Length: 219
Image (cartoon, rainbow, N blue to C red; front, side, top):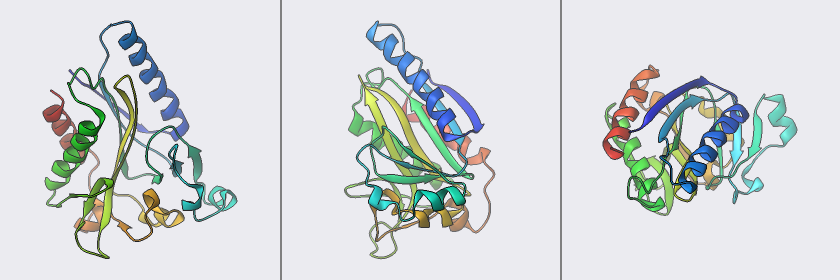
């Protein structure tokens, strides 16, 4: 029902172009009342900062020149959400799904993505939570000054076909988040599975759990 694909480490612009081709092909099929290939793509990116369509450049804390010196690309993209960072050690997931096929809307879709992440990190003993009025998955969301984000979500949909998706910090170098106000927040932190567990995580382990949980929620 869902095809799982792994692109490995791929430049953001290359992944975006390939993802958009799949998204547009799915849209064409939908318009022509043909079956849509439901696909979930896994990848990692070299250092890149992306700003959503309604994001604020004021949440970028350094100039583009300094970003270039640090070999960090910058892209304005057509997803929801504000500014975020992608880099090596982060599991990025791009679902190209026809939500009508699964009889759900966009709000329920985002809820399911959050639940998939929560269940995945629970498999490592990490307790993830939702934060009111903020997408993504958080730790200690109800503790002032301690709330920290472990996974971000930003999506785009047209005719209930989705693109973009989620980014889970596995072995991510968190120092790069100091270049931005992550997702527009100035009073909350970021974390990774590696930081919480005190050890590096083999990439395939969270990926396998993500696949299992996608199959559970999109069967």
